[in-house]
Length: 295
Image (cartoon, rainbow, N blue to C red; front, side):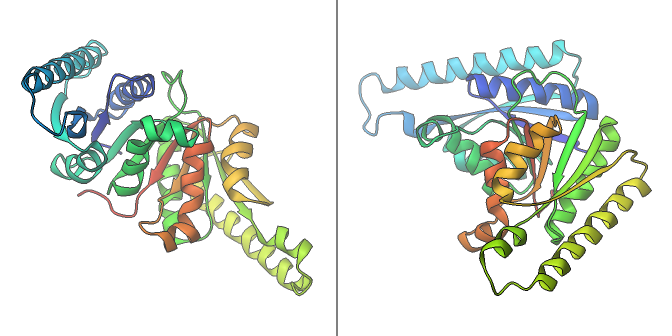
């Protein structure tokens, strides 16, 4: 499982929740924990003034105190491998592009993204940049009382290779946490078939059968690895809404696992929009499983 965990903090409530979860998971996985803060260089005046150095010094002092306090919290919780790092730059690039690679991170933990455009401009853009740019898995912490381990895990699948990577990670996590696993597929064909006359009944039935066979295969895969009471769900509808807003609530899930967001507009349209929607709309924590993994 995850051996090197990075959590980015900024003193906000979402990042405090992320730190709490990072400490909890690092203890459970016996992982090394890196706690980071990036001072956004754009926060400083573009032109040097008489108080520029004083302002920068105060920023550094505040950030160092935040990191020291966070490290103490982790050590008081029983962690031994705790490191802090303070960088200057653009957090949207420094965290996912540089820190994850330099420190061989395999799980990046961030606070939740804003739920609307205004909130995302303030706190969510860093989270979304981490999800899109990070080469390792990203855990977005949504559950504000996240001091317990995961007990009900939902994984969204569509038959793609990337979704199967998400399934493998879900099986591994469900085994470690002794959690109940639900494997879900939302088919959009059923919705289209009601409105478009040239969709033949036989074709819809074929898609339905393929989906049922896929879920049966995935359930057997999970059970062959020791999981019990694995549940599968097959529905028609909009997966961008059904998965994060409906299924997580109906099944009392505390963790949703999806495949990664595409790296460009075309791939996001086909595969990534469900992942992005899950992070924005889910009320439970979300792990975005990435295609590239750290060594």
